[in-house]
Image 1 (tube, rainbow, N blue to C red):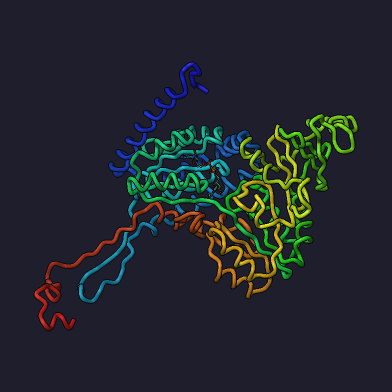
Image 2 (image 1 turned 90 degrees about the vertical axis):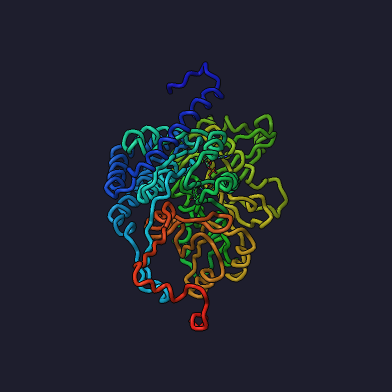
Length: 526
Ligand code: NAD
């Protein structure tokens, strides 16, 4: 990879950061030179990015696959495709978006004119996460280009291959004077945040979001925070359960649950909860089930008691000597080596990004030896640590106090909680931080109106999880703990622009004399 491994990391990092600082200086100079302002330049950059995506989509998708087994088709469909849509939406609208917008003026100032004009903010820092590494790096860049900004992109260190390909391609296709890609993790990002930027656009978890906001506050840099949270789904007995199950299964388990707007938990009325759980399990199996080999997989772990599970959801315990409760070793059942067979996962199903997240997710599984009040595993409940795969897992009879309900899951586990009715679901949601998305499956118009009126979330989807992120016409962003600011389409253009107010008044006649002091009786009556 061209890195001299004899040089200590700190030195390499220092060199890399010196280069990054130079790059940021260059971006500021470019911006000040005015290169990025003409719409011709912006369209040329959007054209170049479109060409880049058309010519290099396979390379990008393969890099994401190498990073965490992300299915190539999924990257094409849900990342590259959406960036292309965004480019095609923005390009023909630039003239309209950047045009002066006349505004009426107060009668006291007449004759006078007022208007607003969107000007580029300057140099934007875009910090992106690993889960949709192409989309969440390039879509904000499209909006920044539309606004006429320079961009320093910092992709996630957890998707390093995609990050490297992005760096190579941005350098090759876009105007080098105006764009830079800086690689690195927490330390490098921390150093970048000390540099002057005119806007910071951060996508990722809330913990780091707070670090970014604190750093931005020191320089009064405006920020967009695209964060996460626990996005709820409400389902009642009026819903079309089969469609609801398929859509919830897709939204939850696509990208192995590592999607910011994925349904995080379901609040289902008691009359449908168990039926819904079975149907989601079936849909999940149809979409992401294993494609061959043995269907039961050994979960690995360091404890003396390690769980193994099967697709039928039954769990068994493996003792330290490797025997199961039925006295057999998992690796000599029917002469099969389960550890090897465990590698047969659907190519449509992504891996968990790293061991830390794998262990975090496995620790959220209910203990099969726990009290009978513990959650019931409808399907899944097991994983394969060597491959960092966790089976689509559906839990029922989950208590609001369960560990799985305390943090954003961000993985392929779906707890289903029973709830009395829509009013209780609204109260449940409102007692927690405001989510990035909220989904409602109900044919009852009054129920849907209730959710629209009485809950607050980044977005609300009726019968449709994830769909709102796929339109350049809809602003995308969070509220409260799920973020601030929004992007996509015109909202994104505005986020990376400063909307400047301009007023103009002829010098003669000086009608302003009507309000100049001293305040005579006549003026006081105005
Ligand atoms: P991540 O680990 O890739 O981190 C995001 C970025 O922050 C990376 O570029 C990383 O290098 C940087 N970073 C990490 N630690 C840092 C530190 N200490 N100081 C400064 N920068 C640091 O991504 P993640 O946080 O694991 O992403 C998952 C979270 O992101 C989830 O909560 C998810 O819901 C949220 N998310 C939100 C959206 C959205 O559009 N709202 C999209 C995707 C993910």
